[in-house]
Amino acid sequence: MKYPIAKTAEVAEGSMKSYVVNGKSIALACYNGNYFAVDDTCTHEHCSLSSEGFLEGATITCGCHGAQFDATNGHVLSLPATVSLNTYKTVVEGDTIYLDL
Image (tube, rainbow, N blue to C red; front, side, top):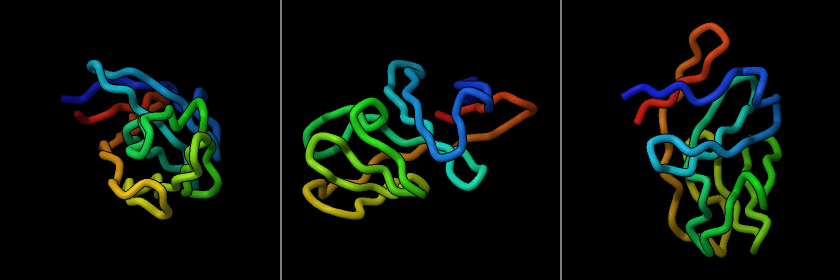
């Protein structure tokens, strides 16, 4: 099912924001003009990636213990996390970003 999650102006290049969609906390990141959606909760210690972490390039770094993930595919890039993030397809129509759950 496709859910409207945000307007493109809400998520600037190189940033990420948290949204709750259908009961799930989602981190929406903008990298290289594209929007990527992953679980907002770090798989290591359950910290919010969007509010406690940061995005640098396509790398999401958790602010709690430094685990890193690839925003484009959710894969773990560095310990202490060992489990990848779930990813969700995004579609931009006009100025609205939709999330496919």
